[in-house]
Length: 391
Image (cartoon, rainbow, N blue to C red; front, side, top):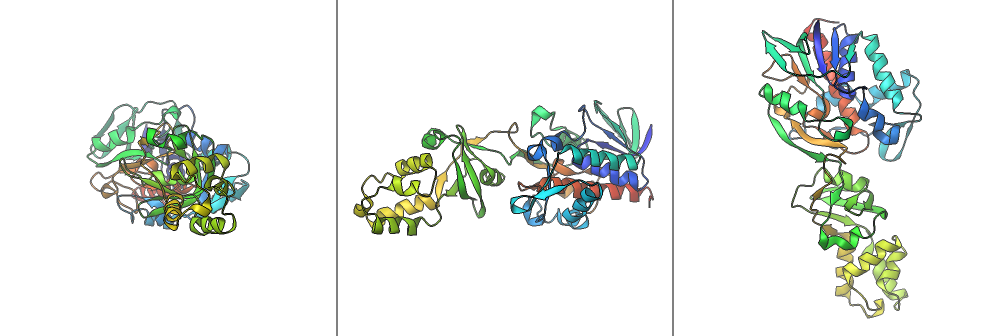
C-alpha cells in the first residue's frame, strides 16, 4: 500500500494534481469521503461548469500575498486547460466577461478529469474516511496507506450540504502551517431593518456598479428578502468586511437625467422619471429613500445634487452574509507564506502540499476559482513527479 503521493480530495484541484503526477510516472492515490468525485464541479455554472475565464490573471485573485498565484497561473494557463477540454471533444461556449461553459454538462469535465487520472494509473478511493494522519521518517500514513508526499486538496467549508468541511485547516495546523482566518466569499449580503425598503422588493434586479473601497464591479445586482445578491454583489462580497459598506451606482448619469427631466418635464415626479430607467418597484423605493415629493420643476439644484448622490452611490452597511451555506467559495485558508509558489509544497514540511480552495487564494466570480484549481493542481503534480525522478 505504498504510493509516491496521497492526495486528499477528489475535487478539481485534487484530480488535476493526481492526473499530472500519475501521467508523469508517479504512483498516486486519491482519497475522498464523498461518494462521487468532483461534486462541486457538477453543480457549478447551473450544471454546465464555468470551467475557466479567458481573462484569468493574477489581478483576479485575492490573497495575503497577491504575487503568490503568478507562477502557477503562468505555467498552466486558461488556454492550457481549454486545449485539454478540446482534446476531449467537449463543446464549449463563451458567455459575458470571458466566462467559458460546457455546451452540454458539467459531467463532461468530471469525466475528462477521471479519464486523465485513468491514463496516469491513479487510484481513487471514494467514501473513505481520512482519519488520523501519521508522519514519521519522512513518510505520511493515511487510511492504512503510506507515501512520501501528501497533498491537501479538500477545499474549504463553502456549500456544506455538498459535504464540504474545514478539514484542510485542521491538517495544516497539525503540521504547523499558519491558517488565514477563513470566511465566506462570493456570497449574498444581508441587510438590517434600516434598509427594509430594499428587502421589500425581492426578485428585482438591475445593472449596477458595486463598490467596496477602491474595488468596483459592473454587473447585475439582485434585491432579495434578506438583502443583496447577484453577480455584482457576490464579487463585492469577497472584499467586504463586517462593519464596512457597499455602495451601488444604479443610475450612473443621474445628474444629466434628472436635470433634463426638470427642464423638459417640469411637472413630472422623481418616481416617474426613475421608472423610465429602472424597474418600477426599485424606482418606487428609491424615490421614497430620496424623499423628493414635489414636481421636478420646483426642485432646487441642491435637492437634485442630493438625489444624484444617492443614485450614484446608494450606500448600505450590511449586517453580515448568508454564510458558507450560500457562499460559492471560501476566502482565507492555508497561508501562502507557508508554501512555495512554484510547487505548492510546504516550506518547513517536505513532501506536504496544499492546493486549490484550501489555500489563501480566492478568485473572482466567473471561472477564476476553477482556473486556480487547475493551475495549482498542475504545479503540485509536476513537483510530485520531479521529486521521484519521473520524466
